[in-house]
Length: 459
Length: 112
Image (cartoon, rainbow over all chains, first blue to last red; front, side, top):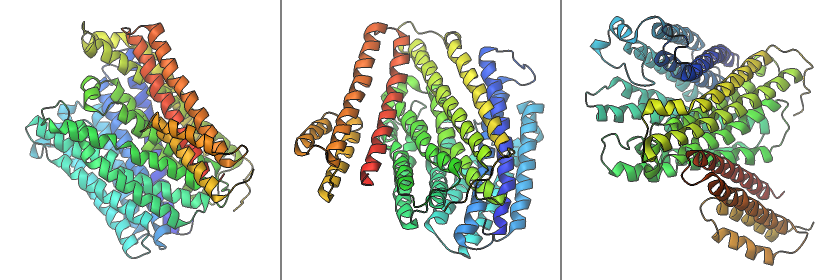
C-alpha cells in the first residue's frame, strides 16, 4: 500500500462483507419460503425478506464500490486522499442509515414506515429496489455527493489516468441516475420509465464503467502489462457498454403500456449488450496471457478472470436469452428473469468487488498476498460460490421455462399459483445450491483469519 | 514446429472463424475453415489452429444440434420437460463453447 489513506477502504470492505452475509441469509430464508410458505411468517413475510435481500445487495455493493474507489484512486492519482476524515464520517453515516433502514423494514409494517418517515411530503417509496424511505434516499445522495467530492478532488489535484477518470465517470453517473428515484409520477407507465432510468442505467450503464475500471486496475497490478494496452481495451469496452446499454433500456419497456417502437429499439440495442461483456472476457484473458510477472496473489487473478467469464455468462448470455421482444412476450417477469438477475449481479458486480477485496486486503494488512492456506481456502470458496451460482441460475432457468410453458404457452394455461406448485422441485434444488453458496461465503470469510506459510514474493 | 508471420496470421484467422461459426456466421465460417485447412501444411501452427477450430465446431455441432434433436425426439415436442432441458442445456453448453473458442483466439493472438 503506497498511501496511508488507501487504508480507509478496509472499513468499507469489512462492512460490505458483513452486509453480503446478511443478504445471503435473507436469500436462503426466501428460498425456504418458496417451498414452505409459512416459514418465519408473520415475523419475516416473503415481501419483507425479498426487500431486505435486494436492498442489502445494493447497499453492500455501494460499500464495495466506495471502498474500491478509496483504495484505487490515491494510487492512480499518486497522492493521498483529499479528505480522509470525510470518507470515515460518510462511512458511519451510510452504515447507520443503512442499518436503520433495514431495521425499519423488519420491525415496522412498510406503510407505517412510510408514515413515520413522512413519505407523504415527497413520496418516493413503494418501488422495487427503491423501497428506501425518502429520508434514507436523501442520506444516500449526501453520502454520494461527499464521496464524489472527495474522490473528484483527489483526482483533480493528482495524476489523471484513464482508469480513475472512467471510474469517476461511472460514480458520477451512479449518483446522477439515482436522482430519478425522487420523481414519482402518478402515471404508472411514466413511473416505470423513471424507475428503469435508475435501475437499468445503473446496472447496464454506469456500473459497467465502474466494473471495467476496477478490473483494469487489478489486471495492471497482477500482470504488469503496459497501462497503454489496458487503456485501449477500456476505451472500447466502455464505448460499447454505453452504445448498447443506454437505448437497451428499451427492453424493460415491453408490454407495459409504452409505444410499440420500444420493441424494436429494445430488441436491437440489447442484442448488442453482450458485446462489452464478451470484450471484457477477451480483455481479461488477453492481459493475463501477456503477463510479465506471476503475482503471488493467485486468488485475485482467479477472481479477476472469473469476473469476466461469469459477467459474460450472467449479464451477456442470460440477458440475451430473454431480451428479444418475441421471446420476452412469453418470458417477461418469470423465473428466467430471476435466473439472469442472480448470475448477472454475481458475475458482474459481486465478483468485481471480491476481486478488489482479494487484491487489496492483504496489502492493507501489510502483505503482498494472503498466506498459502488462506489463498487455498479463498480459491475453494470461489469455486463453491461460483458453481453454486451456476446451479442456482440453471435451476431457475429450468423453473422459468416450465413456468412459461404451463402458464403462458400451453393452450390449457394454468394460473400462477398452480404453476408455482409444479416448480417446487426446482425450488428445493435451488435452496440446496443456496446453502452451498452460503457455506462458500462462510469459508471465504474464514479465509481472512486462516494462518499458514507466507507466500514467496516473486515479482 | 516452424512458424512465420503469415502462419501466425492464418492461425489467428482460423481461431476467429471458429468463434464466428459459433456465434454470428454459422456454416459460412465453417466452410471458410475447411478451405483454410487445404491451404495449410502438417505440423505448422496454422494447421493446428485450423484443425482445433474444425474439431471444436464439429464437437459443438454434435453437442448442440444432435443432442438437442435427440432430447426433442426422446422427450416429445409437446412436453414442457423437454424444453426445460433443451433450452437450459443449449444456452449453457453453447456459452461454454464460445468461451473455449475465445480462449483459443487469445492464444492464437499471443502466438502460442
